[in-house]
Length: 201
Length: 201
Image (cartoon, rainbow over all chains, first blue to last red; front, side, top):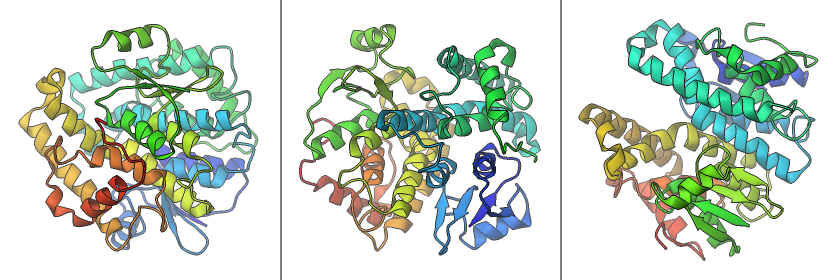
């Protein structure tokens, strides 16, 4: 397998993290913003939806979308709940992450950190994203209070998925993580999983 | 089962459409924008992520997120590919729908149609959404040229999912559907499925 991965992106990091936790071999093609490798991958039709990550499967088929890649890699492993309701709840969190969480938590971090996004980081937009992000993190915190993992009583793909942008929400996004102790404890549990790798590791 | 469903919303319609295609009984609780039923559902904690649709399972567990509900209802039916790669590709389209398509195609329609959103419908935003939406519809059109369904050679949850907001992209969103003949033909194929119901039916 071959992963087209953007080193700075949480969506690509999710996949690298799951590969590490599963101790799964995969060739990495780094396609950072502004790189010639990204241009080449786009020009050669390696990114079906125009974005990384994309997993090239044995045989050459190209699978885009980070959370679909997590499902492909994770089905049948310990990150895939045996119970059908738990599987559905895992997917609820993963769709919520792409529809609600990423557009606020990841976008505020991108506006704050990427020079080419700075023009969009108006004070009004940053304030609105801060408030919206605190609401989303509060929802996660209320859910995680009194439980170890997002779904059932075991780690699942939902935790890997939500970890990616949540663990840098304070450092990159400027969110006040001290307000969310259950989220903070859960982040530590993910980081303690055997085989864990960080965003830069 | 009981579905908390917003009659005007494509995300709720997806679930109603799949229930009809599967000839599956389900009690409907309509929670339209601004209704007392929506307020009551929110106040009583029936909408875990604050939005419809939510499926209440036998036994009382609450499943949010339209595409997770599609997976719950569709697993093991003819809308669920037997092939693992095809299942992963189906999920790619469904995550893309929530991350890219809905935020453009559905949002432009909402800005154009809902009075409470009219203040956000600035000419600049509507023009940017029109251009972005034509790009997304063009991606679907290129993929659908020469094939009947989004994944493999059979209808799947990906088609139900993408149909919901795409079939009103012209009438509600103002997108120029004549530019996308493969999408238009595919919309007709979905509407011809036995058991099909429209958004208002």
